[in-house]
Amino acid sequence: MKNFHKINISNKIKKKLKYLRKDKLYDYSIFGLIVDEHSIAFRKAISRCVKDGLVIKVGNGKFYKRGEREYISSEKPLRIKARKLNWLKRGRVSVSYLKSALSANLFWSNPKGSIPIENIIIAIIENNSLSDLDFARFSFGDNKVIEVFLKYFNIHSRPLIRDILYV
Image 1 (cartoon, rainbow, N blue to C red):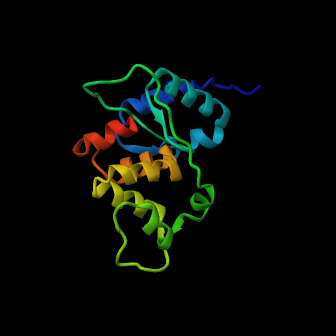
Image 2: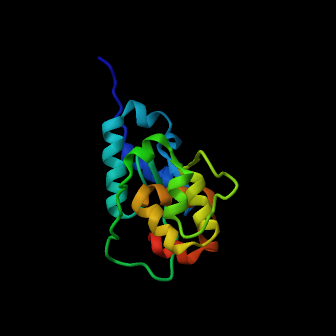
Image 3: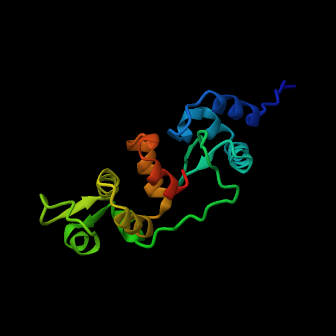
């Protein structure tokens, strides 16, 4: 007879989450073999952590721990879903369309061709183009914009954008 040990996946995940930095983007690979060997239990445990407010899920397989804020809305913010799914699949947008859609010519050095979505979002955030931020949110979805924002920027240096995105 084999001696099976009951593994508490939820406790392992919570213990790992306890030591992660706040306001940093992570993916599920940080949990190692738990994701592959106990996938159903892992998904349930992560869902419970999201429901309890320990982590906030951003997209497929990505999450972050929310840091302390001066003002935290008690209600769950609405997330805008991507409308241009074909752009997300390709990962690029043609420059000719961006010239007409964005308020500023952020990509003047590339008059033809296409720009990666991450570069578009980075340029919008770097230039503090709030009207163009709406374009990015409605075109690519809040999850993609938040993912890029957490990946490439210190969110405390840009509190206005952080508050707009409810990060």
